[in-house]
Image 1 (cartoon, helix red, strand yellow):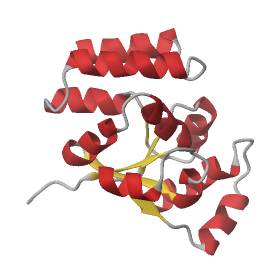
Image 2: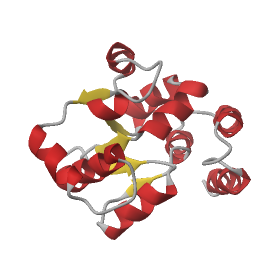
Image 3: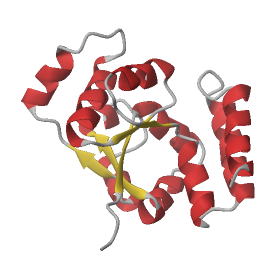
Image 4: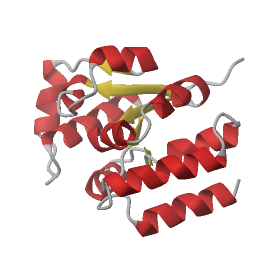
Length: 166
């Protein structure tokens, strides 16, 4: 029996990071790691990434029903509404939230939702043999250059250590 494929919900910062470096990495994730989904309202805040582009990469855009929007509005947290929406969708669907945002990661942890760093997707790809270490490091450095706030030197060092542990 084939193992169930992981469902990875990408938040806005992960989409932006890969948009600024190499969006095709997400296509490799879909092929080798698991389904990648993005909520339509989250995609709406990411300039330059369209539903058509997501479809070409195999990334599924999920519409959000009104009831889920209402449940997200009731979550007590200082994170953005779309981040609360990511939490609710992951909690209700059993998905993994892929984010580099510390506040969203902590919120997910409090609610028992599994999380993954955006760079962790490339660790998975290297482990699967779908991406070379060299290319992964190059993409990670591009992401860091574009997003030094969330992907700082400490985050990059953890990424490199995870690659070394493979």
